[in-house]
Amino acid sequence: MISVRNLKKSFGDHEVLKGINYDIAQGEKIVIIGPSGSGKSTFLRCLNLLETPTSGQIIFGDDEMNGGEDITAKGTDINKVRQQMGMVFQHFNLFPHMNILDNLTFAPVKLGKMTKEEAHEEAMRLLKVVNLEDKVDSYPGQLSGGQKQRIAIVRSLMMKPKMMLFDEPTSALDPEMVGEVLEVMKDLAAKGMTMAVVTHEMGFAKEVATRVLFMDEGVILEEGTPDQIFNNPKEDRTKEFLSKVLV
Ligand code: ADP
Ligand code: MG
Image (cartoon, rainbow, N blue to C red; front, top):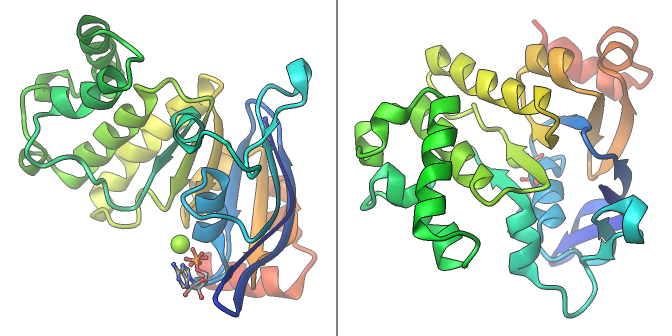
């Protein structure tokens, strides 16, 4: 699905990503953990070209078919890449002046992916999945944080992405709303979506991740199954990090 080769990213003379190599196969659920400032967000943002990598390659697409496309190459259609790689952030960024239906249907209709009717139908279908069909006419300001984040996920899914990126999707939520968002993500995982998730929710990582990546100072210091990383970490930095977050 995606193959990252020697990905580097600097801001000025600050090298934030120092050579990331990683392959994510279709249907995998990668959870990325690591200390603040280690480059987790920058890594995700490079994947869907919200940041321009300084060097390296990102091969994205159907491996079996054609070996994928190097999306870091000149002339890549950035918008097309972003449509195929949905991203959900800590903050929901819904359009405050649009109701939920319009928030969901705006982009796919504008981009000509669906007719208005098709988009409406798809929005209603997805709202049912996340149990928010009664909010279709509401405005974002009338929703709780957890509800807004579930809508933000649905909004990404409207574009029928091949892969979903989540950057700390529950970190800004009140604790009682974390569960409902994680449930939606688990449901998506169970349906086979390829996912890369930065999160501090270690329970989610243990339950859902096919692989866990520990990032430190701009590199993937260690990676493995949840069992390997949580129960048998090799690196001292991983152990130290886990001892702080698991207390
Ligand atoms: P994490 O998500 O792991 O906390 P980030 O990827 O957000 O880490 O940040 C890694 C480093 O890159 C930090 O030192 C941060 O200050 C720096 N950084 C991130 N984005 C920018 C930017 N747009 N300009 C300059 N520095 C940045
Ligand atoms: Mg971050």
